[in-house]
Image 1 (cartoon, one colour):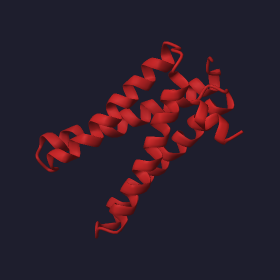
Image 2 (cartoon, one colour):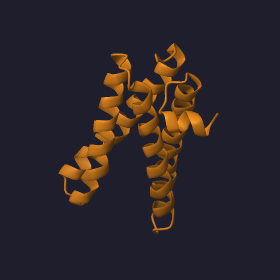
Image 3 (cartoon, one colour):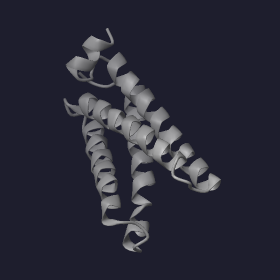
Image 4 (cartoon, one colour):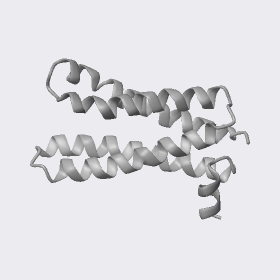
Length: 131
């Protein structure tokens, strides 16, 4: 099933935000300010953002499922990460910046995921559970 124009725009906005957010972390990893484990979410999000962007732009059959997967991963990751950041003794500014990053990512993820499901293009299990 093809994605509506609005759905494609939301999906690409999610991809763009994801790539912007996570590619900007690479200098922190290279400088040694973070552990090598910090590379894992960077790789997952960058690969996911690229894969979903390509699927949406090429109008591939599985694009809707890919968008829903990235959206679900985004919401789950930021929910856990924000809880850890908020309770780990970080400065208020650090918590606020990450809360904004997470809220923008989560909002785009929810909007894109819901749009895909409204188009009837998401994974079958998601379409059934929301019907």
